[in-house]
Each structure stands twice: as C-alpha cells, then as structure tokens.
Image (tube, rainbow over all chains, first blue to last red; front, side, top):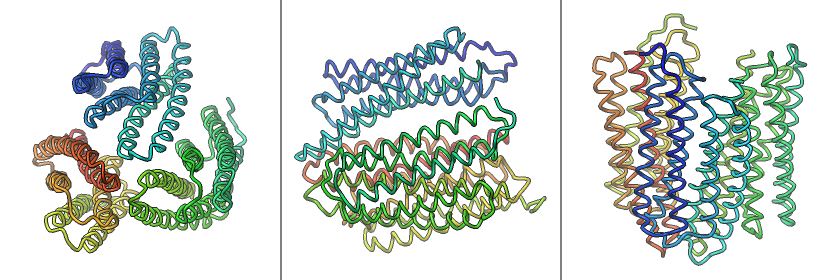
Length: 206
Length: 206
Length: 206
C-alpha cells in the first residue's frame, strides 16, 4: 500500500476511461451514418466496453489501496461507475441492433445518437479539467450543455415512441426500437450523471 | 451562510412541496372523471411539476448553506427527492395520456388514480406533522395506510395488465396502457417512500 | 437493548433466510419440470416469500437494537436486502406464470431457472461460511461461479428475447415471456449482488 500515491494517475485513468466511452459513442455514430456490418460494429463496441471496464476495475483497485486521494473516495467511485454506465448502455444499444436484426436505423435513432456524441465529447473535455481545475468554467458549461442535451434526448425519445405506437401494424418492431431508443437515451442520462458528479466535485474543491 | 437559520422554513417548504404534489394528483384525478382537453390538463400538471421542482431546488440550496438543520441532512435530501419523484411520475402519466392520444381512461386507470389521490392526501397530512411532532400518531397511521394503498395499487395494476394481455387484438394499446399504469403505480410507490422517510425521521427525533 | 447480543443469531438468521430463498428457487424449478397446478405453486412460493420477508424484518429489527454486530451494519443490511430481492423476483416470475395463464414453459425459461437454482445453491453454501470463516475459499469460489452463472443467464435471456421477437404473430406472448424472463434473470443478478457483499465482507474481516 502506498502512502504517497502519484496523485495524477487517477486523472490519467479518468481521462482514459472518458476517451474510451467517447470512442464507443463515435463508433455507434459511425454505424448510424453508414449502416452495414452491424455484427462487426457491435463486436468492436463490445471490445471498447471491456477496455473501459478494465480501466474502471483498475481505478477501484487503486482506490482501495490508496490512503490519499485527489478528491473524495465516494466521488471517485461514483465518477468511474457513471462513466462505465454510459458505455454499458451504448453497448446494449449496438448489441440489440445486431441481435434484433435491424436492417436500417430510424431517423430518430440517428438523431438520438448524434445527441449522445455531443454529450460524450463534452464529458471528455470536462473530465480533462479535473486535473488542474484551471478552467472550472469548462466543467460548469459542459454541465449546463449536457443537461440541455439530456432534455433534448428525452423529447426526441418521447416523440419517437409516440411515432412507433402509431405503426399499429408492427408491434414487434415497436418493441425492438423502443428498447434501443431507451438504451441510447439512458446513455445520455448517464452522461448527465457524470456531469453532476464533476460539478459537485469541483464545488467541494473550490 | 447563516449560523442560525429560521428552522421553520424547511417545514414551510416541505408543506408547500407536499401540497403541490397533491394538487398534481388531484388534477390527474379531475381529468379521469371528466376526460377532455387532455393536452391542456397535461400542460397544467407539467406546470405544477416545474413548481415542485423549484421548491425542491430551493430546499437543496438551503440545505447546502445551512449549518443547523431541523433533522438529519440525508433525511431532508431523501424526503424532498421522494416527493419530487411522486409528481414526476404523475406528470409522466398525464404526458403519456396526451402523447399516445388516449381517447378514454380505462376503469383500472380511474381506480389507480383514486388510490393515488388517497395516498397523496395522507402524505400531506403526515408532512404537516413534521413541524412540531405533536401528533406522531398521524405520521404512524398515515404510513400504515399508505402501505396498504401501495399493496392495493400493486394488485389493481397486476389485474389490469393481465386484462390488457387478454386483448390479443391490440398489442399497441396494451403497451401504451401498461406504461401509463406503471407510472401511476410508481407514483403510489414513491408516496410510500415518503412515508417511510417520515417514519424513520420521527423515530430518530423521538 | 442488549449490550452483549448472542452474536451467532445473526448467522442463524442469514442461513435461514438463504435457505428459504433457495427453497423458492427449487419450487420454481419443480414447476418448470412438472408444469401443472400453477396457481398452487405460485401460492406456495408467495408463502415462502412472506417467510423470508419476516426473517429480513427480524434481522433489521435486531440490527437496530444491537450495539455490537458481527460485521459492518451496512453490510448486514445490504446482505439481507439482497437475499430478499432474490426471492421477490422469483415470486414475481411464478406470479406472472399464473396471472398470464401461461400453459407451458418455454425451453429458455427452463434453462434460466436451472441457472437460477445453481446460483441459489451456491449462495446458501457461501452464506453458511460467514459464521466461522474457516473456508474463505468457498465464498471466493462461489462468487466466481455465481458471476459466471450471471453472464450465462444474461446470454440465455438475450437469445430468448431475440427468439420471441421473431414470433411476429403473437406480440402479446412475446410481452408476457419477456417479462417473465426478465424476472428470472434479475433473480440471478441479485444472487450476484449477495455474492459481492459476501466477498467484500470477507475481505474486510480478513
């Protein structure tokens, strides 16, 4: 056990985890704009999810063997769990596209994924501010903006489900898409959780 | 930051929040018995939900800037969050009635909403006892009664879903109603969460 | 209030609760292999669930009136809640089989329940190690194995839902089974939660 950990390694790992989550979102977005080889794309995203999982485990392990941490232990735990959740839901969405043999994305799915990518990009930039807190405004603004994206995602999802439910002739398709929309929207929600944790961490350290 | 907050303002705000939640339940109940202008009713409930949200934010803000609180900080946080949740689910239910273009309420929806109104009414009277704890029995009895209502809601929901699933000819209608029933039932569940928090707060202070 | 509780009674109650949960899983498994008198089987499982509930309440009550506990209060609370959850989901599954008038179990339901029984059996043997911690390896191995079963359950559930969604002609049946699969899978997930709590308790005490 280390008494004096190199404190920046937590930051290194957070940034690495945030970037992996963002890569997952980008990969899902690439699939949306060029919809083919779905199995392969889903597999690629699954690999990224395993990578992010391993980073999360390393962070938790380090947390359990470190006396002095750069900020509250619970916040470190919450932050890494929330980032893990974002990619879990992204992976769920891409897994279902393959598993349910979806032949083409709906307009609403494309819109939701583009909102998701905006949110993960902002998340990365906010996580990168944790290290030195030189630009707390970046965290503050990312939080406001991710909150706005989350509301937008919720609206798109509501309208998307209402639209699905008007397609009375294919209830199974409605069920499939509904689940996929929910996974994407939950991924966006979890970005908001990350932002909230970053904001409260910043306030405590300020 | 105040060292000596006027302690009663937390109670004022709790009561205001509880009453706003109850108004939302009453508005949903009014819609059930006189089912028209659904969009307008849903909009009205959305406004109430925004009001309750603002009260919750004020409570959290006050909590973060007050040294001495009338009871445990975590309980204040949990209480205001749980009340917020009740109205969120009520708003979800009314939103879906409009969004899914439901033309008339089912018998089971009417029954669930009447159980909900009983629960929010009891919730208000229990929250109003927090201030002076002169009648702890009111809190105790409200808890027992809300628990009974929650079980009753669960039974109505189970039977309602079983009934929906027998209507093999309209699966989309089943999906819509199932979601609406779930929102109403969850609102009742959250009333029970409020009651549980009140009870444990009362036990600690007793 | 007791200053010197007989410490082993917590262990007695944990074991009793674990065994009751396992009996519930066995009863669901018996129903799967000999599918008849569904109402009666569901009622029997409901009774077991009530019994387990009462044990959980007794544990929480003892926890609230005991100064010295054999391990962390939060872990005792988490352990008993997680075991309670396992049987709640088993009861939900059997209740739905009766309520939705399911006439015969699917191959996938049988598979999921057999995974569940493996998990609850391992859970019992791990819980029984808590008392003297003479064989920490049993807990360790049960955790690894339950984790493997949880992954297997997730895979079976995914494939089962994909299969349901190919039966385009009976969406209501798809909805019913999907819900039942989810309850069984969640019961398996909750066994993993129990295992995780046992493992962390063991690590702290070691």
